[in-house]
Length: 141
Image: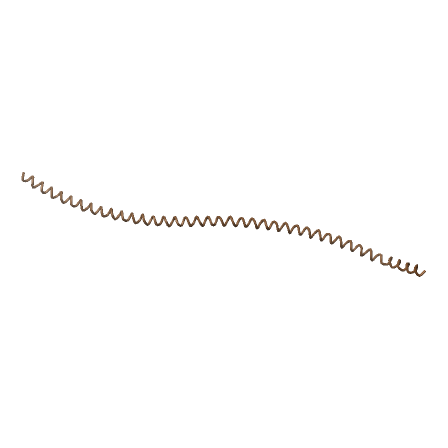
């Protein structure tokens, strides 16, 4: 009888605790569903982050390649500029030499012109002397 009473007390305690247990079970199920949703959202975020990291790596690789190409172009341009500068210096030197040579030629032409004028003056003087001698010879004849 005591055992039956105790069993009846336990049964009542179970009946009294059942709504709390059912509520706890529902809360656990809701928490599990919420945890699954959070896990799914975290997986999606993780995938999105992985995709973004891959995009960033691709952009970085592209930027590095672009940088290398621009650097190569810059080096080629610099080499061309150095070559053009050296060529301009050489042309300047050639112009100086040509100017000096032209100056020397001009000086030689001036000297030749002066010599020619002197020779013409001498010829003119000699011609006049010849004309005077010819006139004397004609007068004697």
